[in-house]
Length: 193
Image (cartoon, rainbow, N blue to C red; front, side, top):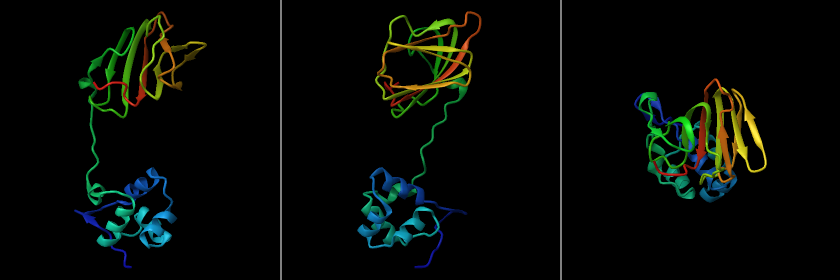
């Protein structure tokens, strides 16, 4: 089969990564896709690496084996920009912190929140939980103490802590003279904003 690049304007269209992602999300091996489509493992591998471009009929066959609509391969990726000055202020927890939502409102897969926590700012005396699988806090500047039921972790500039948002916790800027800046990554988003 002759390899011909698919052109979109003056740029070569790359669909291999999307095909590989669809295969891997389903837990399929290249061998399983090859058997399902009647193509060789090497050819499937070359398609996924964008070394070769399949014919339309071959692409339809591969997409059918992956339960992937062919059109999804050609849609532009959705991107959203939240400008620093446009990031909405939110009240996640506690007091003494300015919190800004850095991901678009309505983004349900992940939320990124920037907190500037004044000296003594806290998530509250009571431990709380968020309805999310994973919570990550990265300290950009200053220090932050994250309190759990049985322990506490002191984070300094550049430190990152990962934990379940369902684990009761709170936080505190223990420095009485300097603010702390932190990024919180929450997966999935615990609420629709």
